[in-house]
Image (cartoon, rainbow, N blue to C red; front, side):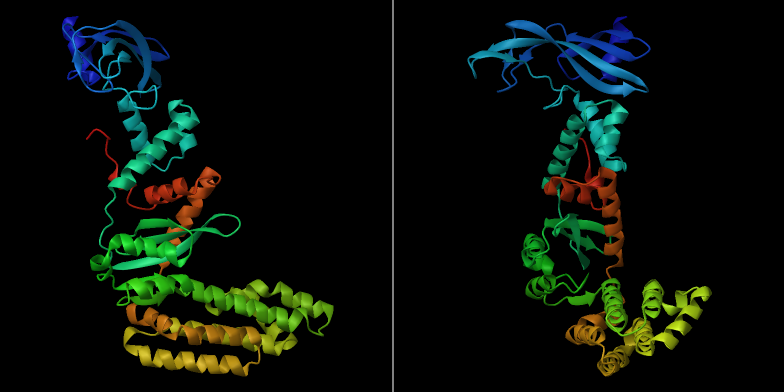
Length: 417
């Protein structure tokens, strides 16, 4: 039996501690390990680490260990209490295999951390999986994320994408910075102000900021100011998704201007309203059954139909090649002129938007880059929020983004290594 005890002691990684396995009881629901001091063991003070050869008394504590399949695992440990000079009162001896904040073994906490960091499980999922209290798993997750973010070394980014993501209703945002080359989030900060992005560049420092070549983003003005200040050498590239979104918004405003407040008959206005989703389609993606609807639109409201055709013509801009920057610039100028001739205020405002950001739009053609990777990560963040039914703690939310969509999850290793 002595040889069996040695094997069990090694199985629980107790061979380098003052403890050993003296018994093991197995039932249908659980495995219970009886653990006591080795012969001639010394007792280590939990506070100062001083070794003692005598103890004041002994007590027993039960810890949860890594389960064996469907069977729960319990460690019943007989430990010493010592009178140490560091506190001048009775103290528990140090149990190196016990987690610092929970009645769990450190091996179990490491296992829970690994599942949280490497699998797409929510805290509630892990709590149910290991039959732990939700608050316990939440604390473990938050602790490991804080530990990992302190060890985080942001890689030297060359091409980055910057986007904002809502945290809660009421214009609460976080700024998400993605490395386009490794396709991972490398930084998240609170808010969508200039200071939010400034924080990232300040952490990078001047030397690493000088290495950034392109930054893809929407045309949010505070981000543009921050980039101009910290990475003036980098090409700021507009995101086609946000440009097209703004164009569709202008088209929708044109529809309202030409139909909702017009003198058209009620039946015609209702028909135009029913075509609003048809007008948002790119013509090349429009199902054949809707082509007749466009013909009806031309008959009912010709100015709106011409506005739709003008919107469609804008997509030709994205087909220019890097060697055709000058023709692309001429195309934008001509498109702006035609927008002003339309006499439709929403199209004219979009033309002004294009005129203000012409160079940033031309950088789309010049570099061939976009913030598509950032938009894809935004979708993953939305899934993350939905799985958790929202987050109350914005700092925890930012850490979870770094874990699920960034580099934190891949950094995980046991705390004692």
